[in-house]
Length: 323
Image (cartoon, rainbow, N blue to C red; front, side, top):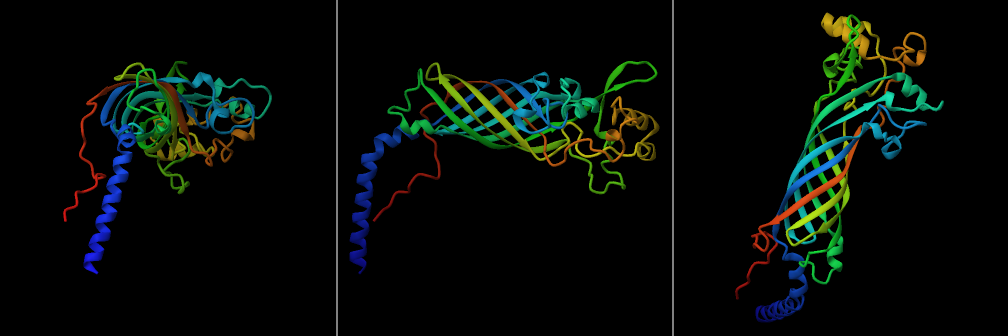
């Protein structure tokens, strides 16, 4: 039995060796891309949340896009390519997000209520993420390592962290000057107040899920340029400090300092219809808590390859068998 098993195992190994030998040429073309890539990005960035938006009923994604809310972001990245068809990218970006109901062009529809709400915000943004890039067309290429002049689509999926700190515009009633003040300390929707036990103070550092697609062009073996769309799914509805309903402004004077209470009272509800229309009264809808905030970018990624052809030690290699 032992001898027969040894003979069978030897035949299996011989067969496997033959298959690997036949496949070595094509496999090596896919896996020979052991290298690193570093570079920079620049991308217009757009906030998708409660403030601003397009005409009609408020909704999600591009229907909620208003061109006036576009800002610019910058970043740097380092990617490790264990093979031509896959890469692991570490990236950091800085930029800003903004939104304002005043950006809306009212046409007498559902957007009128948001326009009359008259809220705004802006925030600086710092983010970092680790993502995986997949290049599916590599498997259809005859010579994947010959890159000059090649065009490759790819997909991106990852996990990241970002930091924000929203500000709102505040008009000083004594001077008439407009200043930008941080909104989180003002508790504009009663976050942290005992009267609203389900409204916790939101964290300024949050997790996001970046996902998107890109198209990469190789000018040479070392230099490439990508056009990339990257959407960030978040798990907070307070990037713009707007989520639920208006509160009783007397609570500001109960829990905040006198100076902050005055500012909060003026900034939490800036509608010209305040005190006239019940749509802007305490308890009325201020935002939509059923939809989390999001943002996306669409820009350019310049990459430089280095360390090409270096063998990497990895756990996917088969161990040697000795008999």
